[in-house]
Every structure is written in C-alpha cells, then in structure tokens.
Length: 89
Picture 1 (cartoon, rainbow, N blue to C red):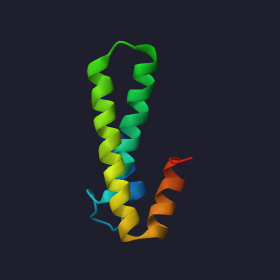
Picture 2: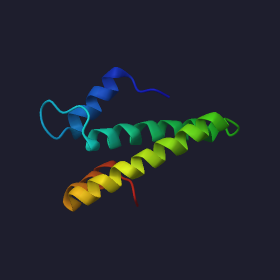
Picture 3: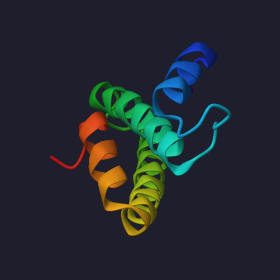
Picture 4: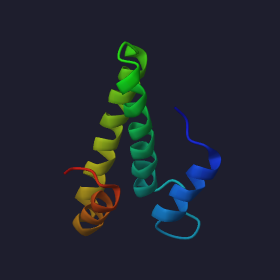
C-alpha cells in the first residue's frame, strides 16, 4: 500500500513547515495517516491478511510516537495537526 509520488508531493506541500521541508514530524504523521487509511480499507476486504495487519499496527505505533513528540514540543501545532488530519476524535 505505497503512495504514489504525486500524492506524496501533495501531502508534503500541504503539511510542510517551511519551503524545503520534506521530513518534519508533521509531514511524517500526514504520510503515515494516509498509508494507515489506505491499509485499513484493504484490511476491510482482506480480513485474513495478518502480515498487513502487523504492518498497520507498526505504522499506528510510529504515528503515536511522532504525535507525542509534537505534543511535547508545541501544543498548538499538535492540536492544529490532529484537527487537519481528522484523527483523535
């Protein structure tokens, strides 16, 4: 469930902190969220795909750690990011 290069660039453009930013925590969380959403859809139709389920859980754990880092650094940036991504209900 990889992302196409064009979609990656759209995500980077939308979430970058400065003009040359391609790997900040915000961008990484946005990329992971996109991959998690795609993989979740895949697992709805392929219930027995345990290898992909394990990968999904690893991605969720990584996103959780990155979000904790952002929250520790800047509360307002954290709230803005989760609001834009529509996560954490």
